[in-house]
Image 1 (cartoon, helix red, strand yellow):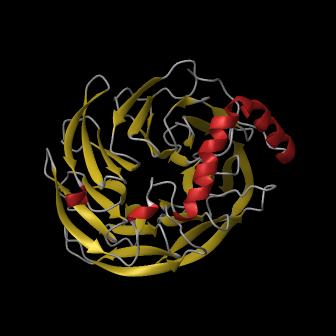
Image 2: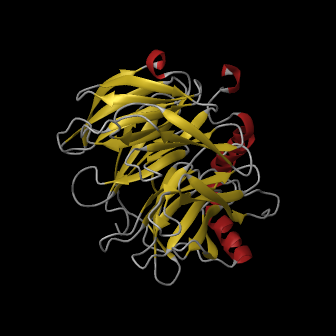
Length: 407
């Protein structure tokens, strides 16, 4: 297996497009304006509009090679957000303790001997209900999911559970309303989404496994959102090989109804190549959207929903050069607009929906190579959302501090 990981993003069905993706952006960056213009003419869609950021506070933290995911929480209880990063190539987990003044101290590092071969994405979740956020990690190489207990100033790998797939994507929530958290996994290979139904007592790591036909191979990433407004988490994913977007609507009683949200047509000679799919609540009127970054589709596909499970329309947020590698979302709430973070090679963008159907755009914000797993948090406590992400084709994570739009 190790021979196919020359570097983690140039592998299997991901490989060729990743190579083309990085190569094209390094060659054609200077032509980005004309590329976006011709795309707008062909699609008839409006590009995101808004002021470009003239300045943004940006920091980077060193990680292991090819970081796949980041989890953010106040792990040590000092009132400041901390960071956990999983790096795919060395198979390590690194903790960074948040300090005042937008500083981070390096915490413990757990190597492959503890974490395992080629781990995927981490999630912060208080699994044992003791009031302290733990870590749940999908480990692709070991075909397992792991529970890392928060010990205050360190973490302990408390339990692991074998699964019949090589999981990369992971989401945690109480899917059936029984008061116990469940786990959803998306594999690097295969054609199933896996649901781990929690059957243990508080803090135990025992599950029954349910499988959902993914509608194609290699779903890889998974997310949750309430597509039809019934209060139950639904499951979202994209299939890279056949350009499809899916939702499994949670019907209750551990039953799901799989729905095809969109099947992209070929765009000239290029495929759209969606890697992931995330749902965001666009406004407090109930309108929602499922958004997929299109790695070779020159944009992000937006599938609008009425909040009751129906698709109302689609649109594209154009990418400046080639396509987006990653996405992060923040729901509209308490008068705050929805935010969508999109990662392209060497830069990230934050967009927010406008009433006229266009998008307010931050302009390019600093990032490294192939930013993934974008997430919004107020990391410095100033009341403004900040954007954190891993530079997945490098060895760093980045933070762009808010305000992210309107600099």
